[in-house]
Image 1 (spheres, chains in turn yellow, orange, red):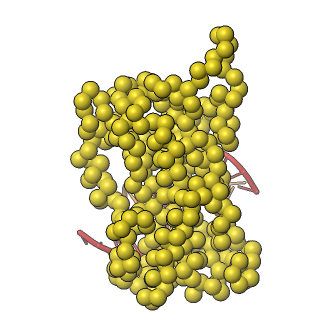
Image 2: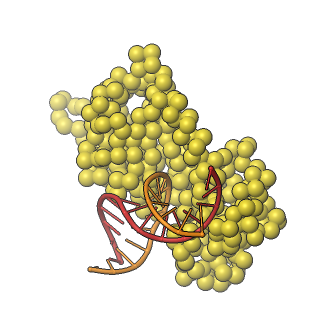
Image 3: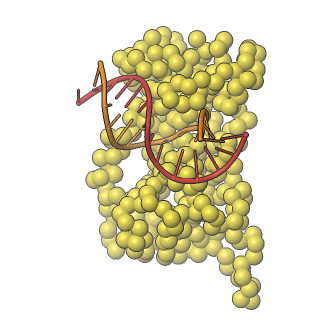
Length: 296
DNA sequence: GTGTTTGTTATCAA
DNA sequence: CTTGATAACAAACA
């Protein structure tokens, strides 16, 4: 599940390869979540240059330039099972032979492209970027600047690592809501970037029961939660994300935060803090992991 | 065949 | 208008 730390890791990986490079060829395969229509988008991207690679929450933003037009941006959302894996160009094409096996393998994804590859972006650097998505929930969309800014302000609140994510902000969004605290911190319009894994982890660190009604949380706990969210996101970025099943970084490698997980997918195992058995329940419509003893 | 997995949006109700 | 709850989306797996 690509959440903020995973998408940021991909962004950093791809930034090195793609900024300054231009698309030479784009192919979409068995994929509907493309806008505008696939052949049109593929055509537009040809000869467009990537001038910057940004991220807001879990959304990747490729700033483009084509024939002096700097008003277009390619948005890619990985949703649940999307991957963006870059494969370096091959200068070592010995004597007309086909490419060596290594050339078409990512570190963990196996062959590229594979049956889950739905877009192949080729660049003038010789490299190729593969968009893989087992469940096809992700999307690829071309947007102009005005439309992009509109979506960003309408749908994305402050990120945990931005200055605007203050204690008073967190306090204010919790204060008036009767929904479970987990639902509030998962809401991208209120805090951008948290997903199921880091929401559960942050609530555990803060000692808050995920099902607790948001407005009932005491100031001391809100402060703990604010700190926990920042800490867990920072630590997860350092670990290059969490690979539970599908997630890989921009080079096809796994993230290593799994070794720091304290509750996520640890149901029926002892709490690392108190020894009590970790439970799993449905909160805010999501599988939710927590320690009934440490999280009140 | 059933339930589960989850990021986001649509839909509906209050 | 806001909030909250729930289903839907696609595909795989147990």
